[in-house]
Length: 611
Image 1 (cartoon, rainbow, N blue to C red):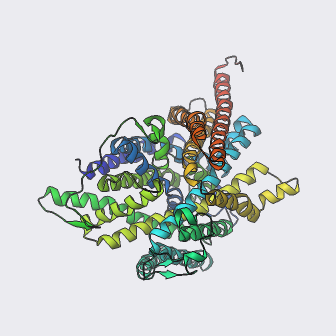
Image 2 (image 1 turned 90 degrees about the vertical axis):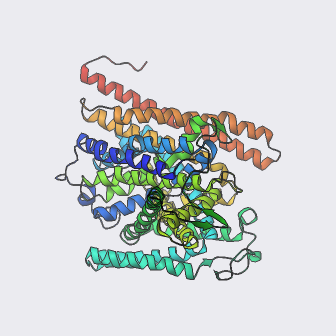
Image 3 (image 1 turned 180 degrees about the vertical axis):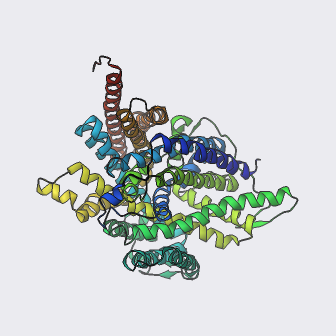
């Protein structure tokens, strides 16, 4: 067995080297300059373009990118292949792939008037390439909303106290927004007071947990809002995941719709800053708990943590380091990388970087901490997820990766907090559950907002009734995004969407790196393209291989083995979507390659050919 601290130290060392060294180089490489006016100031409108203080924007950005995937993905991959491949890909890939991806997406967007990666690609390869990427991103956004809405509902069901605390901190965020932007009161004392109230809300949640409907497993102290489950068993998902989960899903979808159409200062900016306080304390507390407990053991001390009848006297791995090159997920290449997804690199982050964060960046140099640094923070979150799995050691669970993550992450986190600081495990598990749901909610409504931006760029200036409908923020967020996402979840096929989500998300990351590479290639012939081009090429190979595996092997094989028409239709759709995504990605990549080749050849005076 290996001390869990080894996993944490490995990530801390590589992340520190990456931030102090590589991010400084990249900041100079793209010539960040505080004398340049950022889009947030140039187009300030009080709605979307609003300059934000660095800690506020860092909180928003980190909260938005740190969703459920960097917990679910690493735990699922670790259970399939062992903790060693998972932690190595996180520790090495994050600073060289993911953090570069986020930083370059943010920097490129700032230099292109706060526009999206689709717009940037369109600048260099034309409208067709732009529209193909934007449709790719828009479809990915719907998958994100569907998956995250369900995860939030599952968390609320597992930890009813988190539902209460979430409602409290959303209300506090609304008041904090008025405090900052309407009353223009001092930031620091307000931040301290409101953060304190957020943690007080955690205590209130523990005292007064809530559920939408009651079932046989509902604890007697839980406040039930809509009565017995028997009255709500007609809801989609009720038969498979329970009526309470089924009732929470539409509530989360409605929340995502409302939050996405409000001006950013009303909820998004203040809420994400307050949420980030939970994230910093939760993730930092887990990591520090591991190091403190390890130090206690090294100096001859000891601890004893009991959870659900099991006693832990050391923080060591109880999971094999490596379990084999194949698993139920498929071969380790490419499915280790696609499954871990956001813990190392995520295309969704490029939508956040070039969608909301670029419109709020106060100074160009803030991009280093917000782009590169926040992604390292997500890598630390993924490290805690692998560590929690390695401690608990449960690799098989009923309900798939999401339920498994809920079983491992809060429990493992509670053991870390109990070992390091003596926090009771029941309270620790509830708190980590609250941390989990806080960034799930922020990612959900941020995704809906980003989907609006994608459609605005696809349509451009509306020239028809359909165009006006698609760009209307209420119709876009509700009818074009939230309703389709709910139908996907309500169909009960959400688990089959996860591989597609991972493949689409990672392919989008490759295309975002392509956008950055195009920007650099067209900027100056002296700009090296290795920092973005090499990760782009590797991710494209990984993701196209995964999607082809799903589209040409896994889904068709499952189709042949299915015994009912509904399953056959589902597997057929999975195969078609996978192959369509491959076609879109390869087409955009080929357009980008031709542009880079032509531009670089024109610098040298070489004759180019399209053959």
